[in-house]
Image 1: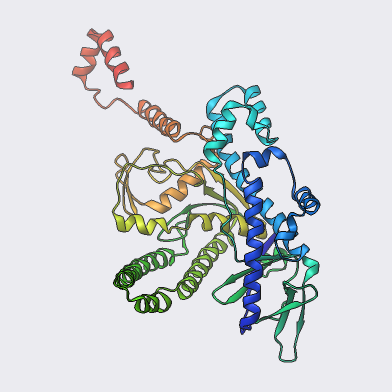
Image 2: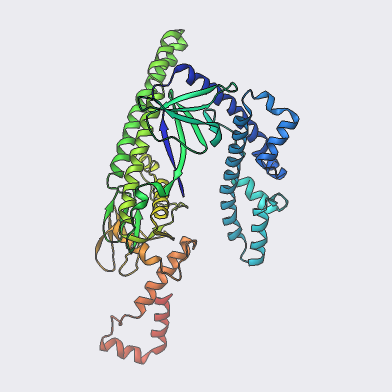
Length: 476
């Protein structure tokens, strides 16, 4: 397994940065050309790979219009074709689910999935309709990246201990040297991202070389519930990543207040431009509506959130050889309407980062990650199996009369669902609710009759048909 690391340039010359920006802009035209020609149904129908596209562009002279070195635009073509393939694969996941809902015939389902995998879905009316629905034509919006092949860069450490990374520029045999505040030289294929006057060098390393990968995992089976106020809650009652909710709420409120002020300044600049005071409008846009500081603050916030989540996941894996987690890839529409402030804060909930951390840490440290169906795990009492009433972080069970901590109760339900023979990963939530209801009904019928008084017993003896009819109605 490989993980991505980022090195940031420091003290980069303005002229060097301008040259890299121009190179990235020209390579952005290459990406746009690839998406325009091969990012649609017609492009997929051609069946061309990145090397075939490169050979075709070399033969017809398309590469002459880019104005960059050959290795630069070839690597960009490969990267863009990979993005198109990933975009297409994500759409196929949704179409595969639609195929499962459409037919229950195993032979027909196998045929349709085979046609979908072989990219021959254009000839099938249903698959073509679903692909048009889930795979929208893409376009390139990336004009700030440079992909450097592994054998096209080198690095050297000067006398002061600073590492200089040399990458190809716009001219042949003219390298651009980027200062990096590290002594570890980036290796492999590099991705240079230009943001805010500095260069981000993205590279991959072997995860087994990381110190965190050397830590052993636990020996137990733990169920975890993903949350907003804390990243994870395990079935033992432990809370991990407890600062997550505070970080997300504080950042959401800060962005709201700042955007209000920016909107007011933008309105003043627009009014000044309408009056003809273009100098004032230019000053406001140049000095008060910039994005460099905003982007750096957002990057720091994302890094802090990722650190909090990964730290919490590591604490779970410290005691778990098998982690049971809920599958939240599909959203469940709720009937309860939330306020605008709650919706705004929940919009920043990083459940994707939590899922990534669980998969990443589990694989690196040797623990198993098992996903289960998430339907009604937060609304069911783990003791009796009946649906309760959720109120904040408390779950009130109307049958047991017990008030549970909602996240701990959900984690226990997730742990129990791993061995549930009736509820599979992709069982629809309506079917899950029916299964839970049937179980509680069967449990209720095994209880002793509550109204077994002598008078009622005598009346049942006189009218056995009436009692049987009433019992059948109760069961229905």
